[in-house]
Image (cartoon, rainbow, N blue to C red; front, side, top):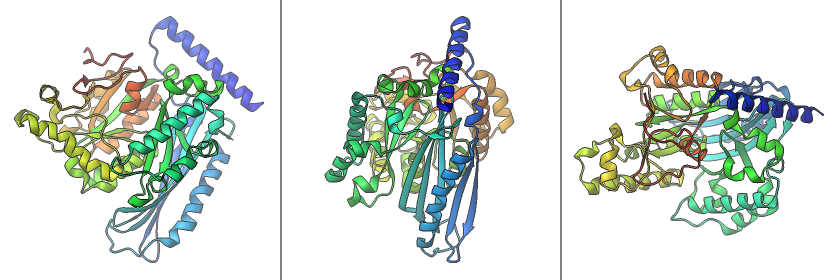
Length: 454
């Protein structure tokens, strides 16, 4: 009965919101729902051998959900904590177990959680285990894949996406065909770990299970976008993934990283507020900060190219410009297994990239925070609040000291003012915009990607 009442409430809210929108044009989105509000905290414990355990804990509106998640994470700590090696020194290059709970919202009542236990030694990822859960937060009932996918065509879509994406990762290696075949069975598909986001359902598969010969412990992320999957969803799932009816959209992007301290703090802040971003990474920094790039990817953020170097492309030859993509991919693939799907050129000099056939889609921005000028959070927020419109792309820099705090403040404001935060992939997929090589994109508002009028 509670489930039926929840469904009727969601339908009523949906009808009311659509009626208002049709009568008054574009409406502000709905604020963060009470059942979606979460408090995330972390606690560090130092073991006798000098190793460190960081445990994230969530406080949601549902005690039963909190208890189940806490049991999962406590199990990781109890089982994996004693296996940590002795710390090699007292710096951050030590022996760690980070037990995180990544959370995300969709619709009016559903939330997903991915419990991740990441073991590192001298910053090398030496093991990772995951467990996912999705719930109706008004009832505490668990949502399974069979509650989302309604017909055989939907399961075939999932099967194809998993098969193709697993094979897309690590292009110079071959997956374990027996393990992949088992994953693609009906039973294997129904047991997949998944989370729901603003415009996509993401399947999470440990790389070690598909490519054991590589000794990698990162994740393979398989996105299925709601517009594609919607015809094959259950009625309830269609309601709970109809975020474009309930919310406006925005993509947060960060350039110039990674950087040891500020990128780490930013990732912690994003974990705390339950949102994903897009990181435009410099290729020549990937080697030194491979652990941070892996963390960006494994925590659901999009990793994109900011060219291999932060050079001025107006002073580069055509061959040097074209090599930026290949050099970036050569650095990125060994770390997370995939190439960059799009890029942002340093200083925004996209014309030179296009004129020299750089061979990559180019992402600009429609809201500039000017955080690189070392502006305070209050100054930035006072300037950008009135600039936000549906489909915006926000420019920030994760190497700047004040940006992690500014980003968290901005996200809280966006959540309460009706915005659903998407990755760049999701932002353009919502309107069916296919990103094309040597084309520049500034935003995505009902398919409009040009510079935003002022």
